[in-house]
Image (tube, rainbow, N blue to C red):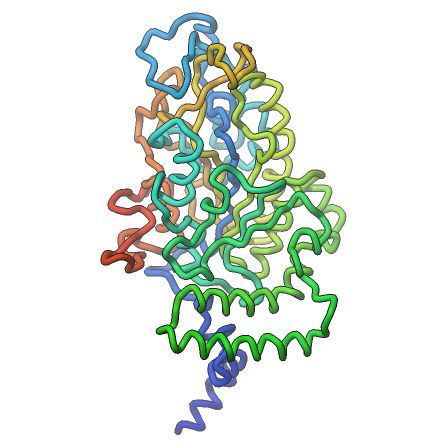
Length: 462
């Protein structure tokens, strides 16, 4: 009976059986092996488009006609506290119009994205804790503003694993270097290191610059395999004497993953293999290249891809907001719109969750001259964590829906407010997880992404 079971197992999953018998951690025994969630879910993978710096909601997806009526005048309300002093009402320099059967209003900055509004749920009542980049970036990415905590992508890959053992389960693409708070934005913290996001500097096009040491120029693949086998044996001996040290385990797994990536990564990041009409759909520029690559990574089984936009010139426009927001949106709008259409035409949007937004929004009032912030200009907006907008698409999301609202001026979330903890709980629910039960034991207690907070926003679900 034992030999019979071996034969059946080999038929069902020969690569996993071979891995188990060989003691390899690349198959069934891998911490990145695909795992079922708590309950059936439509969303199976995620693209998180991070608009770094805080885009202005009142200039993008949350129109406020009252700002035009009161432009240059004091608002008839007590303005919530922000990081810097602000003054009078500042109308949006951009026009809004309705799109799709849902009739959702979108700024002229995002005409390509707006074509897919019937597939998008817009949350106009987001709010965070403080109006500062550093804690707000960590809160959005890791669910905690101060202490080291695993990132959203790390929790997702911890819970679901990945469907391609030759690529990382979680990839973070950020051109031109690290953002504020650097690699903490995709950290695994106390989760095993294999769940940390793999950083890719997508400023580069050449695969050897995108991923360092992707090719070994000194030995053949067979020789490299022999070297890694010896190194693994030495590391495993070392680990056994140290009670299976987690950091050493993570290093062994990283060596193995790096070796296996050499072929699959080279193929995944080569967008020249895409038909010309697809490349034209996404357009030119770094953001277009990133999002097309992200789709290719998801097709190859990567579970979570974070795509940063605004690194170098962020959405943090304390001055010249019309000029700067227009440029940033021009870089991002066509590629994002193309991604949504491309996923849909391939049948991927129904089980891919797409997330767009920054760490907070911006004030509906003009920022007053501030040393070192706006060069003395009075044509920009300060940070605003009291109310801002994010949107979700695909993966079980209720398309063509607007959730919640800020006040009539856009300062504060008033109707159906959604905290970042609530957003995280909802994302995990869309992926099939009860956010209160996706936990990891550390330092004497069970930790989770939402800590002791968070409520699932069921209205966002189809």
